[in-house]
Length: 392
Image 1 (cartoon, rainbow, N blue to C red):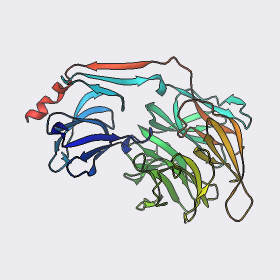
Image 2: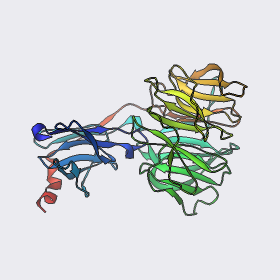
Image 3: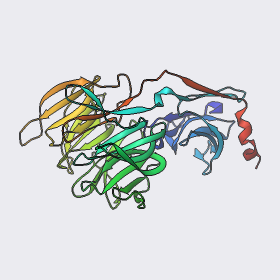
């Protein structure tokens, strides 16, 4: 900030959870750090009493800022200038350059892979897919088809002929999962809402379970407990609610960043990522008691998924899909680990990109090959858009 009274900085959420982005302030006088705003990034000062930043929807906005109380105004002044969430530069005279998009958000396809890595097409149209989830018998697939970036609409697909049905067209959903009876699909969005959609009638009204605070879904137990990840990147925690929307409770109260939850088919174990060792590893804990933590991976791991019988736990490590065989014993233990095949999108994001079918095959989201491009936008004297607001 001007005068050196403090530093404004950003904490970036996971790619799918833009609402986890946060604007922070470090006070040079007290040495204390506080959060100014959730759902905003790339803040910088405009004069002594205003902060500019990027909103969740990608638009530039400003808010008044009082350095004495370290408080932002309740109301934002938004512009019509949209930029990509992380790439922005502003000159001292008010000119702005921003990256608005690239081929990294291009279309993808759904493909089958068997345990040897042999590949066949699902036969579905290409699209920006994420968060594929099978129902219990594997006849239907719930998936997010993104309109932009990583969040989008929720679709239901029937795998015998790959017919599809649009469930929710709001364009804000990032993660989906089925209830055990297959009657509903849960969806969480970039706003933090958790809703339930009827699996039988696309015209049925959606039911809100939580109004905010939810993140990547990790499964629904037979008694209706819903596991999800929530919290800003670097401080994520696993939480549990129910289908009636009970106040979420923290499941594992540890210092580690936690994420990517996956509930076992019988609902007795929960796999997840945590960074106890300084890198992401796969752990398993009992559910719902969460009274133990068993390390599964040991050399890095992401995106755990269970086999239909619960005897194997799959995860991605060092560019390969790994199968951890669960020991036949009273206590949870790993009997063996086997590399199956190279992940079909080397160098790309593994976040929420596959699921395991009941017949043992794997369904992966694989980007369609396209030439790389970057779109850069230049805006001269962008502050003119908000000057009327300062004059009021």
